Image 1 (tube, helix red, strand yellow):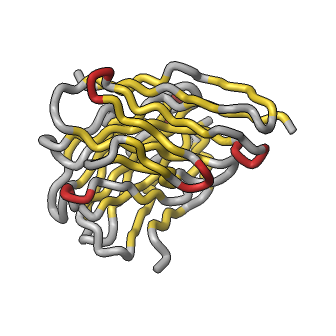
Image 2 (cartoon, chains in turn blue, cyan):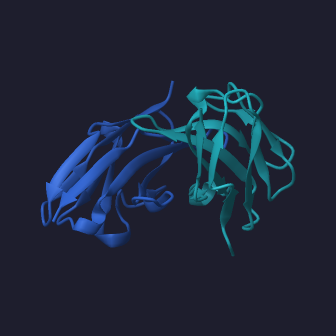
Length: 114
Length: 115
């Protein structure tokens, strides 16, 4: 069965540290890839997405992610985090040959120390 | 546009009680979804509706029913609530444009506590 794995369940960093959150998926076909963010007390919102073209995609608030097809990965990065980046981050995959379903990873809680 | 709206925001039920969670979107989206979010489990799909008049089971459909009332509204019903259904429920919609990717638009969530 298709799945999405996020390697880190809880990450704690200091401000200005660099961030990389891992995401791997298991599906051999064409995919669209997403990162969603949920700030404390808020609903999920799209951070960035990949569906074709340049495998390095840039999102809001200085985040970027790189799609590496050979590794089935879509890791999220930010060179210098801020306290306001404290949130839960979800990687998600939609399968192009299936119904409109998106498979979410279990999420990574990011806590930034001021 | 209000986007995706959900009612109620909070609800407390006793075991065995029934209730319906309401969801509506005003973006003319075709597809709608119900998820539950539990700590350490991420988002799990309960039911979805690819288009008006159709519904399909997701990953965790047991104990729930849904109705796609019209294109705008997609309700989730708990016939006999159980403590295991204590969760945060999110409704989402997508325009169903595969050629541009399927960004999901989420509602604010409903916090449900079953005693």
